[in-house]
Length: 408
Image 1 (tube, rainbow, N blue to C red):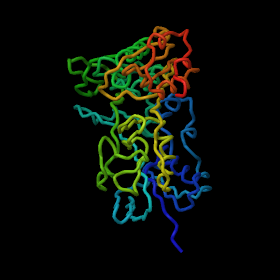
Image 2 (image 1 turned 90 degrees about the vertical axis):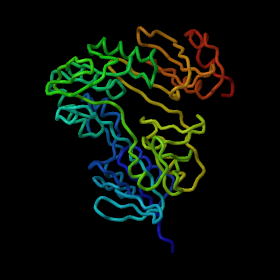
Image 3 (image 1 turned 120 degrees about the vertical axis):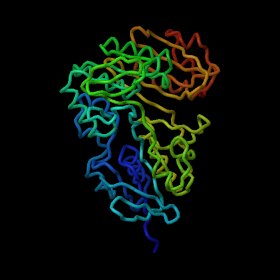
Image 4 (image 1 turned 180 degrees about the horizontal axis):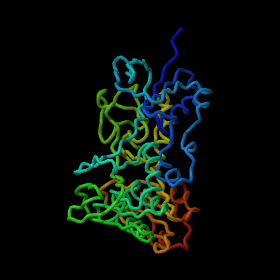
């Protein structure tokens, strides 16, 4: 009688938990071992810079499932344990306690790790990061106790931390080397909207500024300016956690490189979530995005592929943010360095508008800001990948569904 198959999942976040869930939903009745380095049940990370940081969400709400769910679905959950090595030839992983565990299929959902400051003073005790729930709890406590913070980086994490800090009554200075916030993600036109939003809420936004050092009383910039602060929060991006995959000899290229079914260069090892640089059949190239939607949706595809089914992950990239009274959703993808135009529909000054990124007159990405009834139409326009009338696109009197080609 053949032995039951064992599938191992390395990672303790949303992608790992959703993979275990999908495997059971797809009928897999073998052993599932979920190994996560953090001493918690698998949890979602968006609340760490949103609701949980601001105190609106209880800690229990961040967890994907409760402990009973893992027991009831026969998931061998091992929190506080790390996969320290992978031997693809032997189909074995080594765990931090020294145990060697055989697998039939392995899923890497190791996520990403924050970039750290390297300037003088980077290792001072008042420099904080935001990736884990412990870091969130520490930052949350800090915001209730200090008067001034400096946030390094005006990306998503930096701006959401700034918004949470202002809600807590803390004076905030944001230091960003680019000329606008979110320049790489949204471009200068929409970046300017977020700059205005934060300035309107009292944030001292220092753009085109370079951090030179963290001091005992704040930070020093490259131009010699000193900004006083009790705490420095670094939000300068993250890098995929590929150490384990690289040591196993897997192909690494801005993450663990995979096919459309999330299979790595080893046929029995898969990757999903922040760590996966997956071929996207709809976009015609590899893409890695560090957003909640990938960690939520990719695992179901990986699970089916691990079970030998023909699948491909072709969901459009999606992300969202909530800052002060601004809520935003974005769908699609603008490859870095791609020539494009931006068309606006609505009132930018009132921060109630739609934005469309066009290449060759086709909508490749779209965003809604404080407009919540157009999401399906925005997605349809991106999926249509068809030339569009720009004047009609910008005209609020023209219904968006009229612009979607028939049959798209």
